Amino acid sequence: MATLVQVENLRKEFGNVRALDGVSFRVDAGEWIAIMGPSGSGKTTLINILGGLDTPTAGQAVVDGTDVARLDEAGLTRFRAEKIGFIFQQFHLVPYLTAVENVMLAQYFHSTTDEKEAQQSLERVGLGDRIEHLPSQLSGGEQQRVAVARALINHPKLILADEPTGNLDEANEEIVLSLLRELHNEGHTILMVTHAPSIGRLADRRIEFAHGHLVQAAVASLKPELA
Amino acid sequence: MFWRLVFQLLRGSRGRLGVAILAIVSGAAVISALLNLDLGVQNKLTQEFRTLGANIVISPASGAPAQISGAEVPSLMPERDVLAALQQLPSAQVSAAAPYLYIVARAQNIRVVVAGTWPDQAQKLDATWKLEGNWVRSREDQSQCLVGRNVARRMQLALGNPLELHYMDRSAQCRVAGIVDAGGSEDNQVFASLSAVQSLANLPGQIGVAQLSVTGTAQIVADYAARLAAALPQYQVRPIRQVTEAEGALLGRIRLLIVSMVLLILILTALCVLGTMAALAMERRKDVGLMKSLGGSISRIVGIFLAEVGVLGAVGGLLGTILGAALAYWMGLRVFGTAISPRWEVFPATIALMIVVTLAGALPLRMLGNVKPAEILRGE
Ligand SMILES: Nc1ncnc2c1ncn2[C@@H]1O[C@H](COP(=O)(O)OP(=O)(O)OP(=O)(O)O)[C@@H](O)[C@H]1O
Ligand SMILES: [Mg+2]
Image (spheres, rainbow over the protein chains, first blue to last red):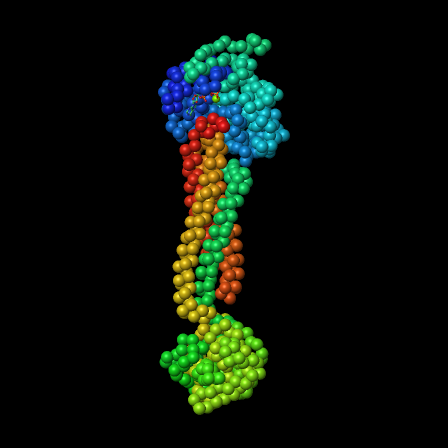
């Protein structure tokens, strides 16, 4: 399979804190990767760099042929709009916008808006009847499903999910995970940060972090266990 | 989507933006009121003729008194000349006319200005007087007079009291028919029959000034004054404007004051908007970080916010301008006694000023450019 993400000797320093210290790995298109490790080990930092929200101190991070480390501000903006779909732990919906408008916002920054398509993507995450609701009128699980719809709307090459179920109860966690599983089955490439080993096991592979280093990569697919 | 976003953001922050729009509306209202007043009053009071009471004065050409009520009239003119000229011209437009002869007489050993006139015309020529008692109905009636309210107070005169006037070695007597409250120098004068004053002063057939009340448009008044001037080349014929030149000069200085007040209000409004926008920018840091993470460029994001602010300025400006025009109209009536109609040029000027000021107040939005989405979205 084609390599979608290639990280080479990636380093990120915040002052004298080394959040990432020589990280290298690759991800094939269509893979579902779980990024694991203790708090402060650099997981979010990695996601931010891969998503073009932050720039590395040294090293390469190539996503779909683009080395994010070399992009300027405008380039990063385009990169985020075109290649990345983010799902955050805190959902991060715009509180003044309805569910469908939150999805359309991503369309707007990407190219043009298409309300029909935005509605369909909400229907697909099971929110066909919540289209005009404001985030404050939605449960946490529903908000996260809006975020999933928003992450998908521009057909991104890479979906980056930083603890997507961290703020959800078990039932909602299950809904969001089954959505991710669906996306994976459709061929999307997903990098998902999680603390929970049970969730990590759903992925094809786990990448384990400790103190900015990779502890263990390329763990064999655990899918047989699931079956 | 752009305007939908702008509208939703406006709605979402309506509490905070309410404060800003209040500042903008009141700023615009005061500015538009001031501008309307400035343009309106200046024009109206200095260009238009008085519509109430006397609006044309005839006086001797040399050393003519600046004020019709002036006590010292150095030169006189024959009553006959003036009446002849008036009779020559069509009388339909003249609602009232009267000659005046001013002398300084003594009464109860107090010096007092006595105006000899046709008292029957006073009611129309001095339409703003408040009178206690009765007007004098006949101009031949030498037995009655009107006294100013200060005169009445000083001399303790009540309605019906006799008043004895002395001039040199002559004297005349009249009864107080009415007490005048004019709110001006007339309050210190006595108004008696012209013929009585002429014989008291021994100036038979002489008058100091004549006043006319001509009804009609400004054009009619001006035309009439011109024809009167042609008929009386040896005298000065002067239309009275709503405001004298001295008052006009004062208005000029008021204009300076108004301009500085407008500037001050603009600055205050900008400051108020600035405060609100700074708070709003802080509040929206997270949304901006998120928009950036979705691939929104800072110019597009700030563009949305600026449009929001622009709408605020335009709507606030419009509301305020209308309010201000109404305020100016009301103040015109109340303060200047003239109806000030809104000037169309004030509307775009005020609205444009408000939009500019509001955008200037939106300067804090610049700091949104520095928002680092990675830090903002890291969570709380
Ligand atoms: N903006 C920053 N300035 C300074 N230090 C930072 C910054 N961002 C992250 N760090 C540091 O970098 C290290 C890695 O942080 P990161 O957020 O990537 O950890 P994480 O693995 O996501 O942890 P968690 O599981 O708690 O989310 C931490 O020590 C953190 O304090
Ligand atoms: Mg993290």
